Image (cartoon, rainbow, N blue to C red; front, side, top):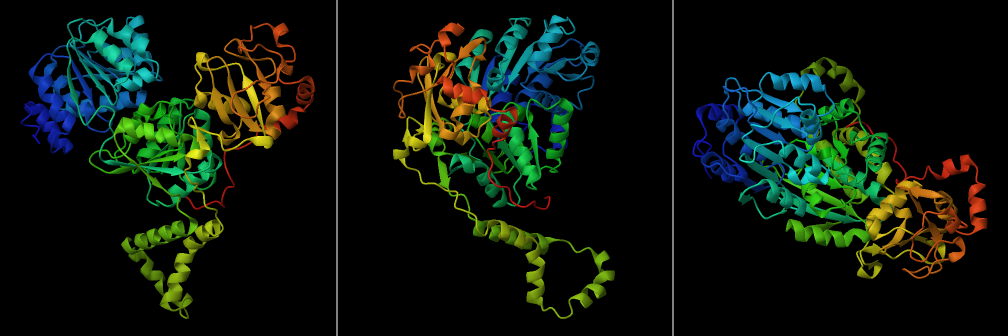
Length: 602
């Protein structure tokens, strides 16, 4: 491997590198820096999160710009406020000996007037989120018509977050002859489209293979019933006493709920999602970086700004919609030369997705069992013993030793040790001594088309719903939609089957009235969504036409076409006659099992 001196960086940058303690360049830095220093070229660099991409484009940009000029020469776009601030701080550290350098961060949630004032002072480099940057351009508060270098950092994630139009609009205000450097962990079709539109014959470098996970991360999955997902999460945390983790959920609601339940059960946890105010997000991230929070529960979008090198585990509480997103999640651990573990908690219906992820990341998952109570008690006991063994003695205790010795004068060494460790051990033992086995066997006979068809029969109701693939639903998205609408647990909706313009799903019989009542005269995005009981309890088949509606699943938008609404009239009358307090009671169904007694804070 080369040294930074051999890459051709100037003395100011090398001085900063020494201060930062960098010894050797990472692979992406070793490949990208010489290309960007030696030629005026566009570049596409594919590398995982945590591989040193900021330095890979930051050092060449700092070397090439004219710090004596107040003109904006470099623009770096990033998906989130946190990542924007992170890049800005790193660029300032890299350029600390470049006299006259001004790097300005532009992002939402802070005063646009203050940011415009900073730019006006002369910002050679602007680091920005797309939304705020577009706003400032429209207000003519920033001029990027003379930039020479533009960087799209985490390009795939920016496009996943819906910034394609903003990026296109921003880049349209830049010169055609600029150099564009695109850095991304994955290369989906949308990123390739941006590259083709705004780049000219770019050079390409790849660290590892496209979309491949870093070798520093091992991948494991745990197969449980969906209703035991939260209990499995707690056991994985307890089985790893020194865990410092990010837990990923698919929705903001689940993120908040899991975090609140962990806190209630005595874990050091916090939530990070888009419904938090910027001040709340800052407080959570500050606590996490200081390790005051041991488990951070986050959505994919909110986690894009997490830059913490010591994360030991990533736990996928739920798998993401897009397989490529898993690459970003697992990239939160195994950073800066450290190793990490990416765990996935799956139900039978999701096992096939593990195989799809394996093909994308080119890594094998190891199937592991959720540890039982005895294993957890042993791990916790030995963890406590090691901590005590390695604890430095505080000699302020010496003056109290006589009183302590007097208290234990009749206690021998073994008995004293047992008493001491029982303080912590007994709590875990009492909680786990009668705990059930959460593991389930993997059987292909229980799966059909990636969905769980092991449940059903006379105890469940099958429904027809007039939305499907044309409406943007696959089986997983429809399941999430129904769960959110009905305030149900993930295991309460099953046997979901999507067709082109309609779909089917099941719930237990006791939820029938709730389902039909909710979807009476229900509109989604301006269109009536019709749910009816299907005659066939198996997959597909005819539906019970007593509720009206059309065979092709189209509601037509006319209430006269929807005579009966959802289900038969007696069902509807029973539903409509339910008291509001009864409905509120139903809506309190939880995704979580019984909580253990509160534990001491970690």
